[in-house]
Image (cartoon, rainbow, N blue to C red):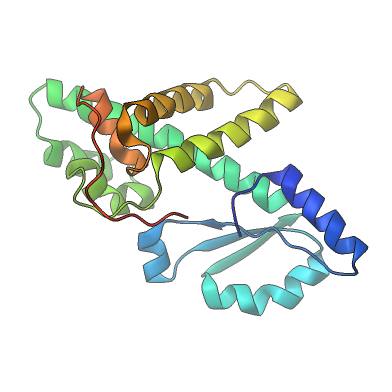
Length: 208
């Protein structure tokens, strides 16, 4: 269930197969808040028959279980989801900064975003992380998100796919890590866009 990338998943599946075992790559979509609510989604790659056998176990952990294809498909979809999250993260940070420059309070700006066409579960559960930096538990670190984008960009480079938004988000995450935000929640990019200096996070964090 780790975010390991599709190549690693296929290698493990091949090794498991040599020993007569099935392997499923089954990372989840959702952060700490969704885990607490029991509404995570599992993205699964591997043999369909093995997926059906293991589905009751996954159902005990997650609300939805999606079989996406052969080995590596679940890992690839996890990276695809995370590039969307990273792009959204950067967009929220920039939107809040621009609204702030116009004299709009962060609370009012966030209320507007969550009532607009871009409203999403992500905006709902990340509010505290964006508006009260350091007060919310760290659900996913800047360093881990940068690692996931590196995996995605590696796949894209090999396939000849241009991912300019992902590349830009990765560069900003790298800057955040360099300024002392590596172990902070990745929503810390909002503080960097506002021009705040790096600091060590003061809230406990949960790595996923």
